[in-house]
Image 1 (tube, helix red, strand yellow):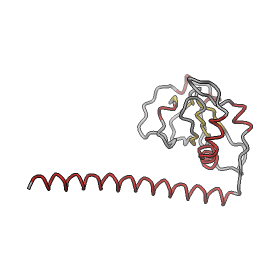
Image 2: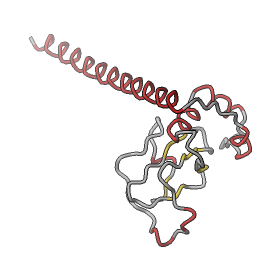
Image 3: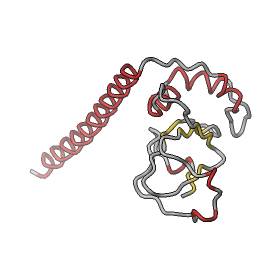
Image 4: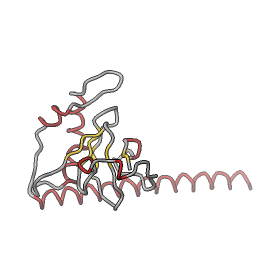
Length: 161
């Protein structure tokens, strides 16, 4: 699988259905993504971080991504992705992007980013709160959509009488 930015939604989540477009034997082992690698989309207007979860499908990242492979257990990959996706971090990174037609965040800018790393318990708490907040947003959106359908049906029924 050759992962590209277009395979991710606005939240940085990988689309459920992907079609293999790369043969593993055609790729050097060092380029294959590993479970827990953090992908950061550095090119374009849609910058986001996502954690690669290996589901037995060999994959490599396109050149629009930086691949961050954590070397110690003090930082959860999901926390790093959350930190990079945080509004404050995104604003800081976008302010340092170069290029006008296709803005790009350089490797140097990413390397110089100061990352606040709380203890693992706090990282997990942040991730749980974020997960619950995203679920809340999704439910609110579903409620709003269903309410719209209900109101439209009531209006149609009112005219049908």
